[in-house]
Image 1 (cartoon, helix red, strand yellow):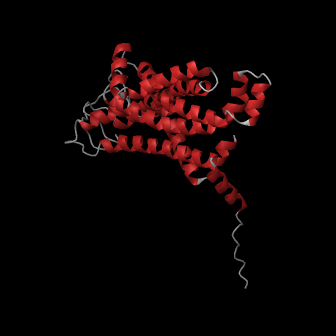
Image 2 (cartoon, rainbow, N blue to C red; image 1 turned 30 degrees about the vertical axis):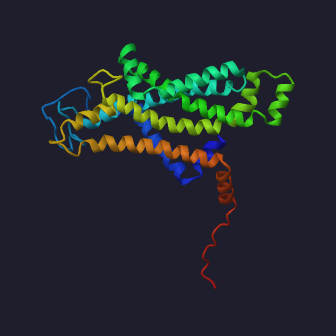
Image 3 (cartoon, rainbow, N blue to C red; image 1 turned 90 degrees about the vertical axis):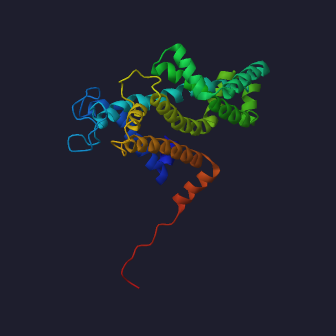
Length: 292
């Protein structure tokens, strides 16, 4: 894909992609890579890192590394679920609000304003308690709460091209709204949505970690990165360094998503295209030949 090649051509793009591929590998294969059963305790309670337990054990003697690896699946795919729900709920109405008349536009704008006004975490906790304490329900609520970001981005990008001559020509020729969106609008809106998607993945990751830290969306003792962090914080007197392992993973993952969003914004903007053009046309450095 052209966009992926452009992202890969920049050092920051390669760093973000490689790290996120590493996180994705943990999410897919983490439960099988865990050296111990993440739910089984042992007599080695609050043990320090050793050859047997690389990151030590928690207050029930469970291997911390195994719990981090096994918890990668819920933590990572939970943020993916948030981003997909927000994309569908926000981007599609945002695009259609430009073409389906003032009534649809007014209704969707009022719904978006309502979602923005709601206290995010408080509402997510309340609805999750109402629907049931499980990851799908929690991620559904969070995805809907984040969807205004996609609505505004998609709507602004669509408004920017809605008066383009080729779009007006398609409308005058009798093309349907769906045809115009698929063939003219979507390709132009996609870069802005891709930036919002990368940012939302980082936001979703923080939200998922926060909810699981509070025990929302999971049933203990199911391992999650937020849950591991919460259990480590309860015993700082015995292992003061323990929260560092999970915190570093969470922070680096969010930074990688934000870095990827910045790279996408660079390569799809005018400044980014100029940078890539200069990199392609830059003269090769002269090699030393040993002569004068």
